[in-house]
Amino acid sequence: MVMEVKILTIFPEIFPGFLGYSLTGKALKDGIWQLETVNIRDYAFDKHGSVDDTPCGGGAGMIMRPDVLGNAIDNTYTGGRIIYMSPRGKPLTQAKVKELSKEKSLTIICGRFEGIDERIIEEYKVDEISIGDYILTGGEQAAMIMLDAIVRLLPGVLGNAASTENESYEDNLLEYPQYTRPISWKNRDVPEILLSGHHENIAKWQRQQALQITKERRPDLLEKTLDSK
Image (tube, one colour):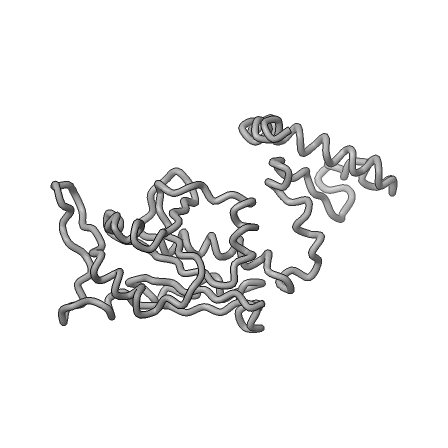
């Protein structure tokens, strides 16, 4: 299955950006996923390509108009989930990334200004997703980050499927420390347990390290683990 991704934006030239490099870029070239950009301004109703207007009820900034954005959706949408990158959306988690990686088609709305008209979200049953508790100048950056996380999980993108099984956030744990050669560097040695060849003991050590790091840095993740049991 080829994942089809459609981006609605007023800056289509931004894409594919860093998604055109490394594993995601190779996967794009190989046809594992497809990327199409839609310039929202092309669906405006005046010669200036106006897409925004002042907020009803007052307030700072501008709001993306529902008639223009709706026109863009109506004329380009071909199915699948519609996502709006929004700071008020549900947090993007690894579980959410896995869920989205199973979709055949994704349409992603990249907002600008102070956001989009609420009626778009209601009319098209849009999923709002946030990549963190902070504000960006637009949704394009957030969309790229989300897509980077999604695309790497598509079949055929990573050479070794097992490489995703023990990553951070799997089982609500941060990843354990990783080491490689040289064995000794600046008076710091690779832990002996990792050189023992005893896979069961190594797995136990890795689990203990993951628990300790998660406890120190993200205790909220441990709470989720306990709540799920």
